[in-house]
Image (cartoon, rainbow, N blue to C red; front, side, top):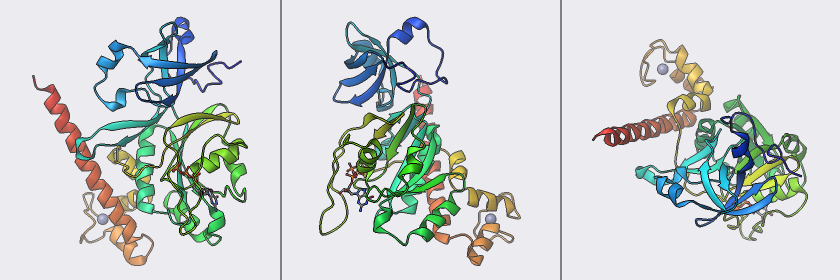
Length: 331
Ligand SMILES: Nc1nc2c(ncn2[C@@H]2O[C@H](COP(=O)(O)OP(=O)(O)OP(=O)(O)O)[C@@H](O)[C@H]2O)c(=O)[nH]1
Ligand SMILES: [Zn+2]
């Protein structure tokens, strides 16, 4: 029989009374106002109580895949969402700012890009920023290595830019690299797979599971981009872990902070500390370590431009959030 531990319950949540623990369920799929949960006794269908529905003011407060909820098993309702120990969030509504939880209570987030056409470093940086903000550990997973046999340099460059993150290469077709991924599927950890559509998330999950858990899109003959297939997020048991397949996201709005910008661009943060002036703007100042690194070719000017762009975006997000809070405080 499953126990809460098998469902991925971990210390790090607020302590709960035994009575409440008896009523815990983990959300495995979300639908239109309905949720599928899993308890040690088995699956269950759930709805929100009227009271909880009323209390929800933004999407962020809705149950997400991976959430732990307190249920009333008799009425099959969700009474409370347990505060998340981590959550991967994106901003969905452009300049309106609306946080949406893609998956909750995660240990790792696999940021997936396929080595053939999908590789886009600015997009990877956006994912990493949100991932550091989530509280879970980001891992970069580069798929479809069989289509790009000469990718060693690319992989090395990504590793060099992100020394604090594991970079793994794999092919669901040849099996390359799958063992390193399997080694992470232990201790009932929860891992979300995120990335664009058609990069092989579902195929990878099926390979790791050794069976078809997720439908996949077949490669089109005229190009090698997959078709849209995954439409919902699901919590799936694979080996001794829980994997969450997420639909390919076209829009990926930032939700992070300046602090995580330095974590995402460690190389640039290190250089900036070496600039002669503390408040160096890295434009024409003498003794600017960043300009020197660009001139010497050790820092790519594209990477620095990307950093500046994200810095502006984050500053703007921060300002909007502060304005919103001010408005809410007004009587
Ligand atoms: N050559 C090659 N093709 C792959 C590999 N992994 C996946 N594919 C193909 O890529 C296509 C898309 O794969 P999916 O697993 O459906 O992609 P996905 O990321 O889950 O896509 P969405 O569900 O739309 O988010 C399918 O045709 C797969 O057969 C791989 O390692 N090598
Ligand atoms: Zn400088």
